[in-house]
Length: 534
Ligand code: NAP
Image (spheres, rainbow, N blue to C red):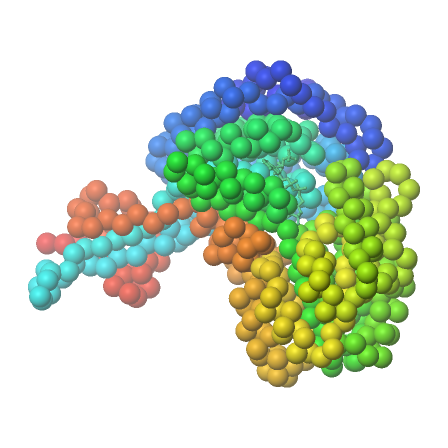
């Protein structure tokens, strides 16, 4: 069986109408991989979204068990794709097999998590305020609200998570859980992996008995494909994970639509780490160890990579820098996801290194040998240098980080006041420090989506309480998360029914509560059936 053909999936059909094409390559060896991938033609883009729109009604009417079953089938299919899927992802990304094995577990875990959310049903947030015809001076109407799917969602995955944030990743499965059809723009850095995952979803849609338009996958290396998808009149929402440049370009295109739609762009971030004096003095070596591990994890290719660390100058910081420099020098070089990311990283390192006032901590080795390899580069600079060189505070995607020397902890407050939005912010200190530095904590609550105490930002727990987001430029919409249970809320909007007869209400809002949901009834949580009116 041919696993990779280079063709698109347009509503259940393999399609090959375009003429331009591109190939995938192995970033470690430069070897060209199987498959010639076609750029999606305008007709294919249009058909994908038209079929997605046509499938919408059937998707809304399907029993919850059918939607949950679809998600379970996707998870099962990813597991059944076995080592062939991991081998292709490894060849396209150079991510090590153990990492990809762990990422597959996260991918199927989050897919089954959304199946459970669909079966349980309370994500619909049913709220009921019963009527009071006798209220004066005006009678109170019967008002009932619940969440409904928004419509077809266009998904863009990131190169650094070929499984967990790609074709069958968190965006796709949370959109399907909300009953939204999905059109994925395949990532051109791992198109074969994308096609294999699309084959799994395509089969799962058939097996679930749902219309084939529920899912499409389009390849494209030109930005024309992405721009056409997000500006298509039938697209109702966009989920993007990737660079600030890409996310911003797509957000601008969406804003210029005659009818703007929500775009949930999760982008890069600098994830500052604040080390308070007591922690630096008492645990400097251990913090240096954890920090360098976090900086180097996955060759620094994580949106949660700690790009800046702030600490007050003095002997403890000197000792910290010495320990961190030794660890940076000892960190092995490794292959990055593709040559574009490696050259952007090298340029970033050169720009930091050449900034007057910045010093390398240990050897500043951006690159090492061939095979798209990158090495850890650690720098230090006085915090005051940021005033002249703002670019030092921007994400440099890869294993580099800058230790900013502060005159006093108050400098950290000044930094936090002007820092851009970030996915995370980390504080190292004692419990008492959190009280003593409460103004810093309060400021960071406005600047980052996740605050970490005595830990490091890389590694995201997929769970109900996770919030993976943050103020712009971390995302385009700080009120939502792309990871964890609440990711579903990006793809649902409330609809309010006023004075509707019970028989015409969705089951979630009917008096008998046939689904047994926990609902908010007259302001109180309740799963009890309500007496029928009259
Ligand atoms: P990317 O280059 O922005 O690519 C993401 C996707 O967007 C690709 O399909 C890409 O296609 C498309 N794209 C990019 N620019 C576009 C444009 N102007 N118009 C239309 N489509 C466009 O990002 P990446 O290299 O995959 O990932 C690395 C970045 O993602 C890092 O900055 C990292 O921090 C961030 N990231 C964020 C998160 C998060 O959850 N916040 C998670 C992982 C990664 P083309 O390649 O064809 O341009």
